[in-house]
Length: 279
Image 1 (cartoon, rainbow, N blue to C red):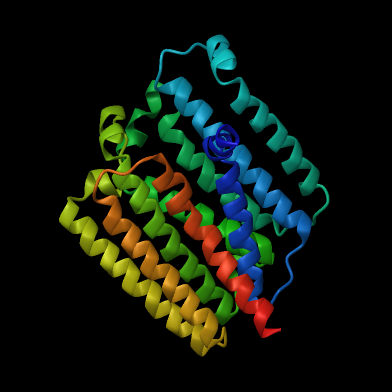
Image 2: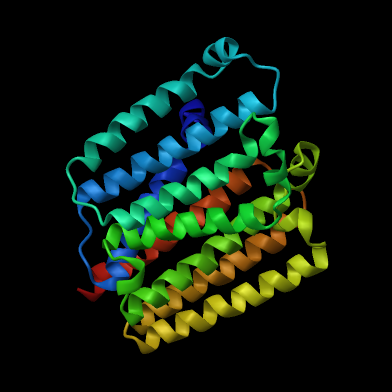
């Protein structure tokens, strides 16, 4: 059971569930039903994207040849291929708002560029905070606009607030992971908010983002999400802030890949429970 648990975490299966969960939560908060195939597409696409990222990263920053990588990372390759099949299957069951999908793909490709094994792309590694912002925006689009099938220019007030709220939440999580990866990013010549800003500026930025998160949460209350959802989302924001404070000390694998990532799943569970008991 322990090996299965670590397999689920290490092969990004858990974080793919988190992406689907956040997408489902978006539908609940926006009072819009989300198609099961859409949730499946988001799950498989996230699983496919993360395993592709780790495979490319492993090849770029190690002595692996393509042949030895296929042997050493056979399980990741199997998960990647399976996820790709699942993504394509779900895709052909749906009629997408193509612009949302196109933006998400472009953001993911841009996020991949710094780890690609091409010397002429070296300048991209020094772009700085772009890595953090790209990932946060990609997650936001994948878990808000794609499940709701709403283009950027057609968002109603509540959906616009949900988009901003999710973006701020994802920025908090991304900065926690950036701070963890600070040392290895410096070795690899990669840049993020944690490598560009000093610790004091990161603390100030966290407070600023958290304040924005809580403010947008209040505006969503004014748009009708309900006091129970306002309290639960505020609670998640506070826990995220606490997790950032805890991350200032050295933490282990489970803290990040189950604890920090798990905040996305936990947030959805709270929203689901509120919807269940209110109806």
